Every structure is written in structure tokens, then in C-alpha cells.
Image (cartoon, rainbow over all chains, first blue to last red; front, side, top):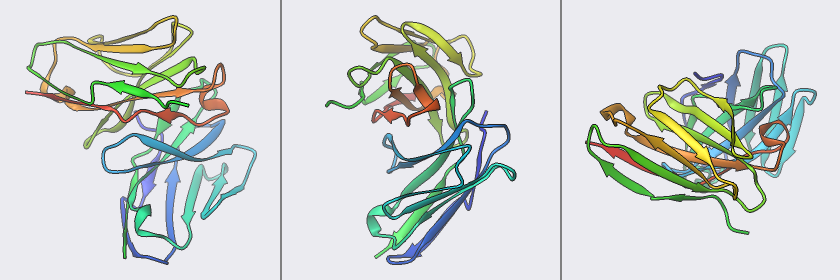
Length: 110
Length: 116
């Protein structure tokens, strides 16, 4: 079963533009994490935001979390062609199990 | 330090056969989780092991099983393979004792299983 649904399913932008992806989930969480996956490879952990945090930054990444709406967003600023990948949100409940969303495919054109 | 190592990278099996996949976590990581990724179902949680004990289990049939050894290496086994078992199987490890509650997971590159 999947906890999160991501929106949009696919996103195409030009280099230099910002990319925003949204994630909605269903149950109470301990934290929410974002991962990147390049073309059928393993996932790379990007950022973790705890349920008592509202916003977190890491380099060009900005993540927000709204627990009242059970939603999160990932903003990538000044996108580069190398950011082309699938992005997944994942929620950790108190059972210490990480459940992934459906993912957003991001294409950044040079 | 070395990352999460999954072997083999690619595997082709025939329906009805069984398969064993291996995962070596990052040194010092005692938690290992397995995921199945398919285009239709996305990333589905299979199971998680910590200190040789299965701590969590997803909604997969009993044909899917796993184990963890004392050195934290883990294997998963799929018996009586079906065409629908074709997928990318991903293994992830996390820091000792804390897992997803405090840290992100480090994933291996996966094993791509094709059942024909």
C-alpha cells in the first residue's frame, strides 16, 4: 500500500526555472522524507522534515510540511539538467516503516 | 565508506523457479529494508530486518521471504516465481536502532528481476 500521492505525476521545465512537487499522505507521521531516483537506479535521500517542523532548507531544496493538511511540498530552485529524475516523498510512522508515494517525474531541459 | 551493495544487478528467471537476492548494508547499519518497484504499483514495502529479526512486514504473499545474518547482510527469497514478480528490488539500510524515525535510508542500486 502507498501512503502518499504526488502531484504532478510529471513536470517539464527549462533550466533555471523552479520546480515544485507536492505530496499528500493519509495517516499521522513521525517525519516525511524526499528521495530522488535517476532512471531505474537506487534512491538517494535528499531531506527529512519532522512532524514538528514546518520548513527546511538544504542547498537549492526547500521542503514544507503542513500536518493539518497532511501535505508537503518540495521546491527545487534554479533547476539544472542534472536534476532530471523521479522524486518521491516517503513517510515514516511510529512503526519505523518508510512508505513511499507515487513519485513525480521531473524533466529539466537545457 | 562503502555503500549498500546488492547482488546480482540483473537476473532472468523462468516462471515457477525461485530466486535469492542479496544485500550488504553500510558497515555499522543494522536495519535493512526491502522494497519492490514496478511501473504499476510503484515502491512497495516488503519487509524490514533489525538484528536478525523481522520487525515490519508489508502485504506480500508468503512466497516472499527474507532473513538477516549476524553480520547484518540480508537476503530475500521469492519462491514459485510469477510473471508479475518482475520488478526492481531495492534494499536500504539505516543507522543502528533508529531507522526511518530519525534518519534517511541509504539505498542500493537494486536487482532487476525479469521473470519469463
